[in-house]
Image 1 (tube, rainbow, N blue to C red):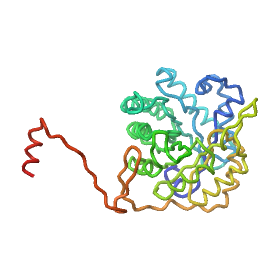
Image 2 (image 1 turned 120 degrees about the horizontal axis):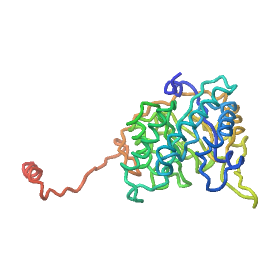
Image 3 (image 1 turned 180 degrees about the vertical axis):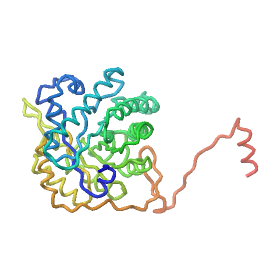
Image 4 (image 1 turned 90 degrees about the vertical axis):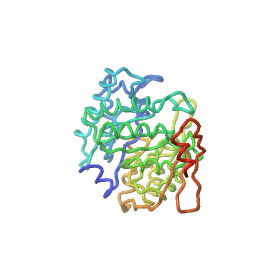
Length: 337
């Protein structure tokens, strides 16, 4: 079944963390995990299969940081080709009889866009577009844009996906403890922007544990007419002096996620610190939770870089200072009312 249809009728389970598991298998500090698609494909296949076996319907390819700022074109193509082949092989080997999809995973570029940084919007679109085209070439089922902490970069990635493919697009942002993106966008501003761009699903991933993201999820559910994604961390990282671990166990994680599934979240999984056990527990905790399609909302919204204003809730004035100097036709039109 096409995943665009499935997310309207059924709950979808995503995968969990990749980096945590790669580190446990020997990924060294500073080593680029995307190269493991070619150097250690058996490990990547094994991890993807573990997630499918745990109940995941969608696994993200090991391409989070695969872009032309880190790799030349030849290596980038090889990485994406290998990553999608590894995930597809895992789907074929899995004992899970449910629907299975392979997503091209796209993370942030690592550069800040103007005005906060020096990266041009069009350049960002071009970087994402190259990754998207390779993903399409090698058979991705959908595009999963995740962990974006800037609304402008999110927009660049979505436009690249829309302009270079007809694949379904999931877009997920990383919210801080203040309930906003790093550059200030609120959840309702992101809902307005992403629905306007026509994504197939939107939501939140990374940064915090499920309990800490409850307020963000409540706001997204209030305003979104689009299926909602929840992919939280296993709580917050901590250290015992020898190892880094996360403070929410699989049982507690699943319980919190199930509570938000009851509120209407239809696409669920895990991010940093989560493992196949977290996904398995989450599937078990939500198997009897009724799936309810996302109801259509009737908001008329104007969205800026960081804020959303719903027209009709209160009177608003939208204006702009105009300088007609040097524009003869414009100046004449103003003079003539």
